[in-house]
Image (cartoon, rainbow, N blue to C red; front, side):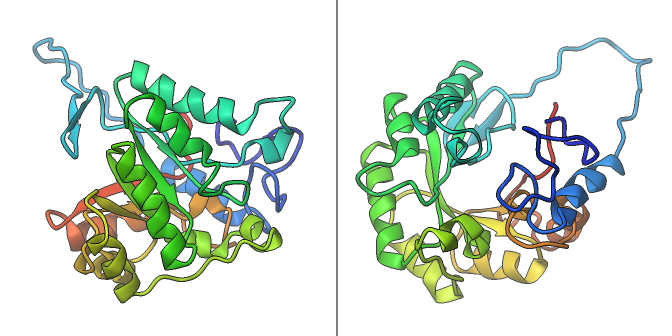
Length: 259
């Protein structure tokens, strides 16, 4: 998909609840795309020629660019294993990112368990070159996932707190929860790895997550797949940056389909 909300994706429009697009009317998904459309590139060419340096350091790992693959999970739910299995998808993302000298983030969904976590397995094959994101399950389960991530030397771990609104988890009896300031503090203190909080859409949450010890936040509305009628991430990003610039690492996703 190129992100244009007028198009179809796998034969489904962006409003389909369990499709690739957004939940409900698809407004949140569309808002991500529309927010990015407000920005254009300035063409400035009359100057000395140079080769741009896009190298970036992420928690001690040198990357070729400040771009990483998002923590998408559960793709076989949309096409079945005849299209691509979850294992194949996770390996393709992580191995492809390694080849591009960047990192693949791997997510979590109702088909994942401590015994069979496709994302962690894929990251392990690269010697830990990846970031493991866990749904906001109960604290004990999250910490067990974090422990497994430590064992395979993941670069970082995190929780996508916006997953508290996950339709897929709810319909498959996989309980998820909102996370408090104290919950985040507990997660941060229980692991040696950097902890990232994903799913930040307001300055209040950004400040609380940072004060609780998160070393990075991800401005994200879960691709518009958990709550209808949220702003696009590019619309809320400036306010969050203004409040937290220099205090924590700020990452963003949502509606990005090209370089």
